[in-house]
Length: 248
Length: 322
Ligand SMILES: Cc1cc2nc3c(=O)[nH]c(=O)nc-3n(C[C@H](O)[C@H](O)[C@H](O)COP(=O)(O)OP(=O)(O)OC[C@H]3O[C@@H](n4cnc5c(N)ncnc54)[C@H](O)[C@@H]3O)c2cc1C
Ligand SMILES: Nc1ncnc2c1ncn2[C@@H]1O[C@H](COP(=O)(O)O)[C@@H](O)[C@H]1O
Image 1 (cartoon, helix red, strand yellow):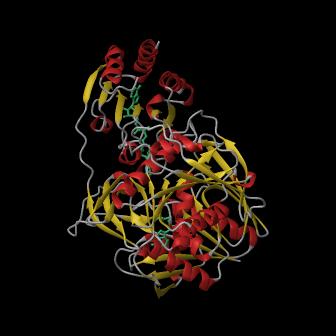
Image 2 (image 1 turned 90 degrees about the horizontal axis):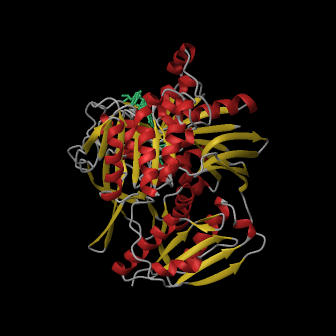
């Protein structure tokens, strides 16, 4: 079975965000880009599934030349093949999903893993949109996944607990932290990844559905006050919470 | 007159989520500006108090009723909502950005060929256009965006949009009984986590960090949380150490929360932690290091040892409450 994993190339979570000169995206100066943290869980689950059922894991990524770094890292973890769907400039989630759906169809992948969220725009939708376009079943925010034939039993995180969901292939699963423990790339894996070719194609993105018109930093918070030191400050804090903040 | 606005009312265990009322309010405010009408849709079996959405300006709620819809089923829910939007000439669909809303909204966007904006924290209506503001990079920046397509789907962040006055009105509940709903995916069980309240939904959160030194000391956090009727949260250091479950983690790779009050106890305030909680209305920090970055976002701080401050604060709050 062909298993696809969709990965995005994003600024490291420790990045200090500054608005770029276009006024609507971040200033890329000094920013380190990494494989999106949630996508590591997606790759791990695909590799585990492949080990259990025999199959091939193909990495898909939409973006520019720089995404190759993230694709190499994914290959080094143990994926078999990769396709870069080339597109420069900002895309909306729908465009990314269309490009991915097009290639998933082309690859005839019956099981597709995503991260639950890219830590850049924090949309949490590309997986579900892709599932919608392909008319695949979809389980988002998975923290547990089991495949038995073409039947899936998974658990997804919800407020105050988990839902146990049953569905069938073809399906999209988006990975949440806790799903597994991603493996480190071995030296052998890193060497092998260097030799693998990354196939390149133009992304089929279609029309733009959402435009970003501006970006700002949030208004800085007024520095608060130190109410006091040690336990003796507790009564004053309680009073402020009641009288100023009106919370208790 | 513009096409109608459809707002989704979410129920869990037959109770309507507070965030759905917030979505209703956003939808009716938008409709007033656009000179359009709002229709609400709810899916489930018995749902308590559906007519109460009338208090926020809704005339009609469509209730698709079946035992099969009691638990969330993405395929069937998406099918029914999209069909309801199309047959009622609704071009905009509004959800609260809950775990269910996040899963469902993009599926509706595909069915309606609508552009989609998630997790809005502010909405403006200017020159006949809706401008959405939403946090990106875990709240380190905000973007303004607009949807180019005629049909539109958006979600609003819970706990951010004010509910306003309930005028006491009652909506007309239009029930459609469905038998034999086709479920392509099915929730077979809901496992409740141990904590009483989930951080994603709580109005007050008390979080503990590595400075608590071990899981055995979290009773101090739990007692303060009890006195405030709050949920317990945790930093990643604590979750990675296995002291608390991941469901309690607040931050960039945990949950993003915006409660009325967030109390950070022995948490340093790393950028990834701040990302998840900086939009809280009031932030209290208790830390023995007066230079800890958490104090930069705190409204009120106590420089001190949590082992002494927490019991004292719990006692003071219990005193005030009685
Ligand atoms: C990709 C990535 C994602 C991440 N995501 C998250 C996330 O989602 N959420 C998150 O929280 N972190 C996240 N982090 C981790 C983050 O960078 C910090 O390491 C983490 O938040 C630190 O947790 P802490 O504040 O509990 O511990 P520490 O940084 O160790 O701070 C402990 C604090 O306790 C204080 N203290 C110690 N003893 C006492 C005492 N007796 N009384 C009072 N104060 C005391 C100390 O002064 C210190 O400030 C992420 C990191 C990365 C790289
Ligand atoms: N440009 C991209 N190329 C491939 N996959 C992507 C891309 N952007 C997002 N994804 C996938 O979609 C998931 C959710 O992203 P988002 O909806 O942007 O938060 C990510 O974790 C990735 O698995």
